[in-house]
Structure formats: structure tokens, C-alpha cells
Length: 247
Length: 93
Image 1 (cartoon, rainbow over the protein chains, first blue to last red):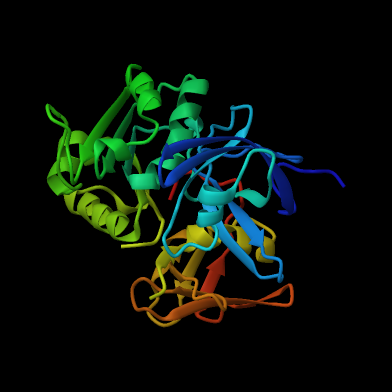
Image 2 (tube, rainbow over the protein chains, first blue to last red):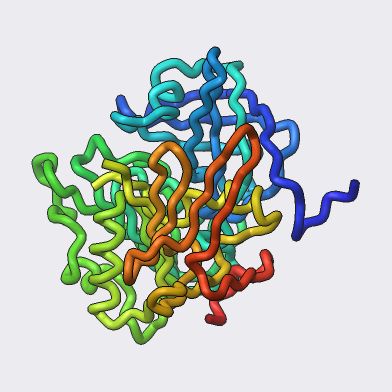
């Protein structure tokens, strides 16, 4: 059966873990090898399914951290206290283990260079994951779309992809602002409060620029941020949101 | 308490059921007439299935339940459900 680019069966497949990197004690980056890898669009995610010995299945979505152009599919997973999947991925998963996976999926929260910009990306915590994919794609595609990223984390230790973000921020046309909301290291000269309307106005694009906006993180954060952006005058139809649950 | 997510969380299930990308599809609430992308619905995963509610009036728009490998879908909360072509992630809204 011919595999078309537009419509294809979305089947579960078994991926093999190649590499595991601890980003923080609760966040891990997992590099996978897939037998049947479909090129994704930055921002998309995959579903991961675990089956217990008694047949009980649990499933959860994880944003793809790698760019479509990267050699392997990479996920970054945060351990959720009441999670049914993430504790296994963080605590037990080892290299060479197998994982059942379906995707990529999600045409709404996705960006590719030809969609243009400018781009405003707003993330809290592990909401940064899909934006790593977008930033890596931006680089690989040698995109000239200007990007502003506002990334909120509780403390400096909670900022993941630190070195990579520093390298990416060195590029013309990419501005990265980090705000540490609970704890700041001595000498910290970056922002130090929760994302609010004033901060969005300070570091984001003017609504007149009609940026494409993506907001990702816990549900409360996403909704507060989206409301603040609309209050600033951004067109709601240009704002795309992805909620990770939680507060 | 069940987490409130959005339609992105069920993109895979929707694709499996409808056979195409559905997060960009538009649904109109039969109760209040609000139109939104499926990605923007309030989605709850209480364990026994999936419930999607209208963000404006809380009306239940869609229920998905999996029974012995078969997913049963009730979309009667929508008055209209427009399937976007999967290729249009464009912003010409």
C-alpha cells in the first residue's frame, strides 16, 4: 500500500531507546530509534503507551524535542506525580528498552518556516520542549523568520537545554528571554517574576507586527498568558495554545 | 480532580478514529454556537474515556470511550464539525 504524505494510517510502533540524558532530577531527554519514522513538523507530539503485565494500558502525549531534520526522534519527559507513564520513563527506562509509540500527531500546534512570522514563543517549565523543536528547525532551515522566546522556569536549575539555548540565542534574529519565577542565583540580571501582561509587552512583539504566537506549559499558565496577550491587542486567531495539564 | 487539557492531548485518538488530522478541524457548539478548533476544546481524561467540553458554555461536545479495542465516539454536542484538510496548518484564518 503506497504511503502518501497527506493521509496515512497512524499505527502504534515499537521504538528502541538509544540514549537517555537527565536534564533535571525530574526531567529526562530520550533519544529513540523508530522502525517507521515519519517526518514530523516542529511542535507536534507522539503518544507513548505502556502495557502492564495484567494488560492494563496507560498512554500519554509527549512533545517532540527534535527538529524534523534531526537524525533521531527525541522526546523530553517530565515526571508527573500522579502520572501513569512518566514515572516509568523517568525512573525505570534504560537504553535498549522498547517503547510503544504513535505519531507524529498534532497539526494545530505546529510551525514550519514557510508559515512565516515573526514568531513569539512563550513557555513555562516543560512547555519549552516543542519550542526546542521549532528553534532547531528554524536553524536547520536557515530561516529568516525573527523569533522571540520567553521561557519561565522556577529557578536556574530548572532551565533545561541551557547550553543549547545560549548557542541559539547567539544567532541574529533569535531573542531569548528567561524569567526565573521563584529563585534567582546571585547576580542574576534577567527577569524574576511570573509571566504577566507587562513582561509580555516588554519582551514580545507588538500586536501591530501580527506575530504567530505559541504558548505552551501548565493549563493555568497557558490560559493566563493567552488572556494577557489578547488584552495587549494580539489577534486571538494568531495565538495557538498547548496545555500540559496541572495548575 | 481530573486535569483540564485541550484537544492537542487527544490528537492521536482523533486521528485514529477519524482517519485524518483533527486538531485543526472546527466544531460549532450545538448549545451556544461558539466555534472553535478541536485543539482548543477543554478536554478531560477521567480514565474511563475522554470528554471534550465547550470552552464557552461547558456543554459536552464529544465523548470518546474505548471498549475492547473499539473506540465509540459521540459527537452530538456539535451542530457542525468541519474537517480541515490535513495539509492546512496555514494561518489564513
